[in-house]
Amino acid sequence: MKNDQKRPPAPIEGIIYGEVSAWITIVGMVIAFVGLIIGFIHGGGIIDEIGLMKDLFSGTGESAIWARDSVFSSMPQHYWFLKQRISGDEVSMIGLVVACYGGVIGVWGMFLSMFRNKKVLLYKKGLFTLLALIIATIITLAASGSDPTNFLHF
Image 1 (cartoon, one colour):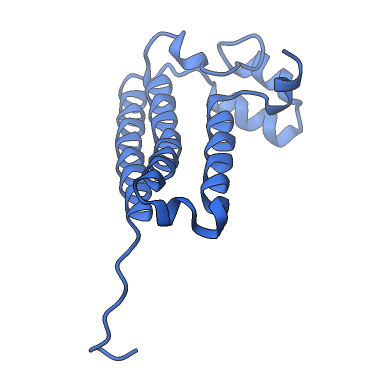
Image 2 (image 1 turned 180 degrees about the horizontal axis):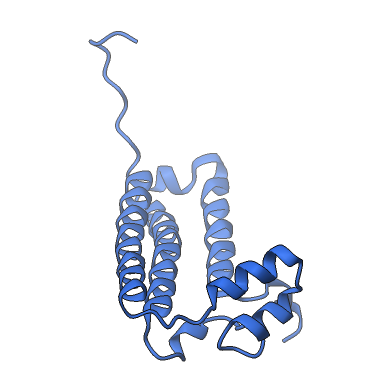
């Protein structure tokens, strides 16, 4: 490519998605890192790491591992870390959730930005807008921990 050729400008939808998801993900990573530091300083996490490694290498089942090596009696569900006392593990999990929701918020921002321009909105007869809505819905359900098959069983 010659140096005198100009590149086309990046679509604003892509910029919105990229910037929003990147910055929220960075914030989530910082929160998770703070959680790791808290865990190293204070200890006392929810998992006995030594017992976990022994059980994993010996082939112990998942329910037995949660019962033996964690503060839970069974595998925790959904946002368990919001119900626990605040320790390094919980702060790290909150950081991971924030980082995951960066993509969710970014894709919804991209979808909504498609409405700013009729040409973008109706490109390929609205197929891209419809696909953006479907993708945004799927990743929102996935990030929320919802079972997508449950929508049929009101």
